[in-house]
Image (cartoon, rainbow, N blue to C red):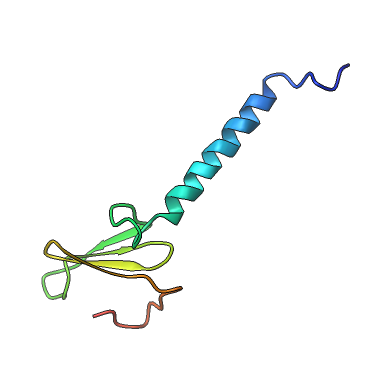
Length: 83
């Protein structure tokens, strides 16, 4: 049996590698790099300082009545108050 006869499985593996690369790119450009893509979005109540908080891979975004404020730290601590 020749070594270059891989059949259809070669194309399945190529597709899975391509799909994994696309998913990695999407998670890397999540909030605050792109505010529309987030790993977690939290809609805040009327007593909060903002309307919505979006958490991403590299930080968080606070959306206040259409005004976009973001932070891009190396990591974020959930116990700190961002307001």
